[in-house]
Image (cartoon, rainbow, N blue to C red; front, side, top):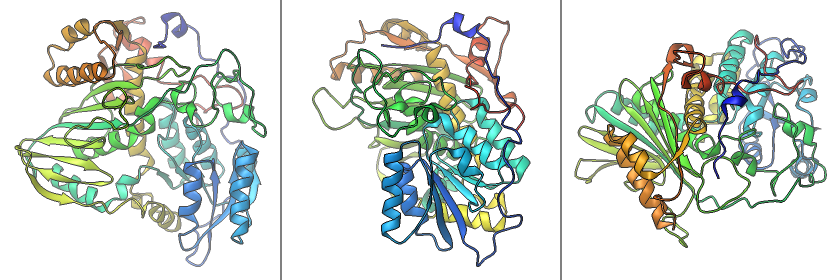
Length: 490
């Protein structure tokens, strides 16, 4: 079932209201740079999954002390804090990030919460004088990502994004090679997220909030609505108020690598997305099968999501030139296939020319801490501005999808006939569905409009107040629930 945004919804004005967050926090960080012999005191917000990984990473960095943990789930918070206590590390425990940001014993915060909290927490942390490591995507919408960039600059904070591929030395070398013309002109940058995603199930009504969960704080900037899915945690990825689908969950990594290899800064000239949710009917609203196309001056980026297996009943996934999750950069004289886990360069005949083993993104947190000490944002491998652009690509693709119209496969083919690259991707889309018992001839495909952008303004081009560009501009920004409001002026 595809959930789209109606034109009537767009006519409802955004209710911002509430107190502005600007200036809401006293500057509580140390006044000067952290000395070489001073511990960088880190707080981690959201400690269930990725946050638990961050605990393990940051505690191994010399000169770092984990000072506090924060989570809206008291059980998860206690488990993480008790685990550190068993190792002799005592940490403060907070359930409300606002109380955490008031603490004077915290220099930097690591944000590993659901997506809809990332930008607001990052802005608040900058206002409170904290440096920030924010997980991907750095935003839940395009507009709020720009606010994080503005906050980092205004308050002079070090803000690193969790796009750790930027610290992979092999990929740094690859980017220099490709952007220098080592394989000739880049023809197309492809990203793939072929990850098995089973149904999240379907419920008949509101579900009980798990014990120990502060649900108001979980919702935060999003609407405070009854829980209407079986699992509160993780499955928030697959509903629009809190998540961005797999294009924003996994795809941000590949989107970032594609843009990096092209050497493109900013947003593309044009975007289009096609997709749907197939194989089951559940409470999720994001697509599990999707194509997004981004037209940059140098070459297009084409990104694909597949949550169903290679064929019905299988436990393995499709691949494109050997890649399931990663990138394929197609050039005049060959191509690269791989990603953050390593890869190889091939000639046009598919013969392996050179391997590029991954050096991993393990130095990414060390890079953040080094910049915290030096106070030099230019030393960051993944500064927030670049991560904002890559996050925005995910949001732009979803905007086209959400404005889409359900069509038959034949109608989509007709629309794609003028673009060989889009037509080829769609034919593989149709074959993939058929292998999973979904007849694309009868199953509706949501075909989004081709949306032109004004990249410098980070807005869609419009000709009237009611054309598709105008509708799309209304989705560049979320509606926020007071007092959890991303401020107009940070």
